[in-house]
Amino acid sequence: MPAKKRDNGEGSIYPYRNGYAAYVWVDKPDGTRTRKYVYGKTRDIVHDKWIDLHQLAKQGPVVTKAPTVASYNAYWLAEIVEPNLAPLTYATYETLSRLYIVPGLGTKKIDGKLSIRETQTWINKVAKTCQCCEQGKDQRRAPPKQRCCARGRCCRAIPSQRTVKGIRAVLRSMMSQAVIEEIVTKNVAAHLKLPPLRKRKGGTWASEEARTFLESARADADPLYAAFVMVLVLGLRKGEVLGLTWEHIQWDGWDKPCTPHGTTYCVQCRDDHNIVITIDKQLQRVRGKLLHRATKTEESDAPLPLPAICVTALRLRQIQQEAARKKAGDAWHDTGMVFTTRYGLPVEPRNFNRSYDGRITRTGLKRITVHDARRTCGSLLVDLDVHPRIAMAILRHADFSITMEIYSQVSPAATREALRRLGERLDQ
Image (cartoon, rainbow, N blue to C red; front, side, top):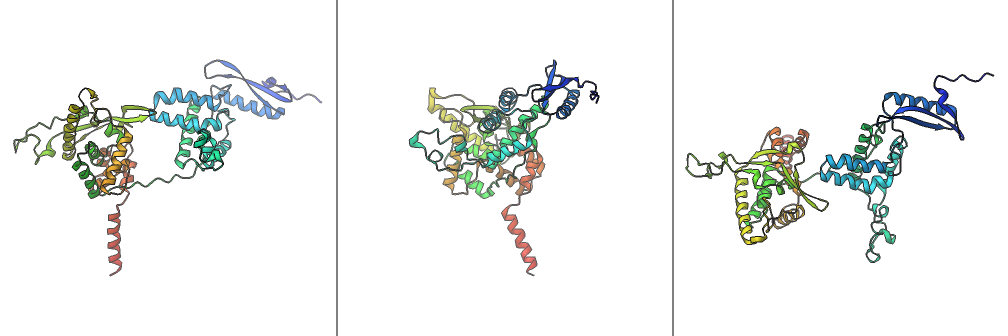
C-alpha cells in the first residue's frame, strides 16, 4: 500500500519520543523569527495543533515561551501599574497579588495552560479558605501570642466578597495587558463568575442633625470645625479636605466694599462676595508615606464658590492657626496647609477619623462615616430640589449615574408622608 502523500509543508511534522512533534516559523513580538513547536501522542493530534499554530502565526506575532503568572505579575506591577496609576491603587494591586494571586497561580504559565475552569476553581477556593491558616498569620506569632489557627482552633478568616472581587479585578487587569502585548489570546479572568456584591447602604443625617454636629464643633472651638463644614456643605472627601492649602482659596471678594452698606464682607450681603476654593489636591497615607497628590479624577478638580458658613469657618481657622503658630515658635512647620497639628504638620487621616467619631459621640447623634457625611451633602441637596446636574458639579462626580444613585434614594420622612397620604386616601 503506497504511503500517504503529505500535504505541502507537512514535512515539519515528525516522530518525536513517544509521539509526534511539529514546528511553524513564527514572528516573535520583538520582530525576530523562530520556530515554535507543538507536541502530541498521535500524528492527527499534532497535525491539528500544527494547523492552529499556522493560523495563529498569520494573525500576528506569537509568543514562543510564555512567562509564569508570577513573573508576568512582577513585570506588570513594576512597569505598567506603578508608573501610571495612583500610589494607593498600586499598593492595593501589589497586596492582592502578593497574598492571593501569586501563591495560588504563580507557577502556572500565563498562556493557554491557564484555563478558565482552573481559574474559576481557584478563586472559588480562595473565597472559602481561612486566610489565617493559608498565610500562616497566627503561625508567625510568638508561641505565647498564638490564639487560633496555630492552636488548632481555626478562626475562619475568609476573605470578604469585596476582597474576592478585588482579586478578580487585579487578575483581569493584568491579563488584559497580556492580551494587549499579544502574550495570550484571551483574558481568562474576564469570564470568572462571582456572587453579586451587595452594596452597603450608608447612612445620612437630616439637616437638623448636621446643624447639631457643626454647632457642637464650633462651640468647643474644635480645630477641625472648618473641615467638618467643608465636608457637610461642599461634600468634600476626607483626603481633599486634609489636602487643602491656603493657596487654594481666592480671597479676592473678602475685602471688596459692600456698596449699599459701605463695609467689607457685609453680613447682610456676604453671599455676593466672590470667594472661591479650588479642589485639586488630596492627602493620603500610603504604606507609611503621607502623600500630597492630585485628586482622584479630573472631574474632582473644580473651583467652587464658598457660601457664607464656609468663609466664616475658614476665617476662624486662620485665627486658630495663627495662635498655634505663635505658641509653637521655632517648632512650627510652615506647610501652607489649612488643617494642621499644633506644630503646623498635616493632620493624619486616621486622627481626623478619631476626632470626627469623638465629636459624634459627644453630640449623641447616630454614627455615620466621613464618606456618609459627604453623602449627607448630596441628600440635603435632594431635599432642596437642587437639579441633579448642579449637584453633580458640587459633589464633583465623574459619572452622572453616581449622582442619580443619591437622587433615587427617598428620605424616610418623604416615605412616611407618602404612606400617610395613601392611607388617608384609602381610609375615606
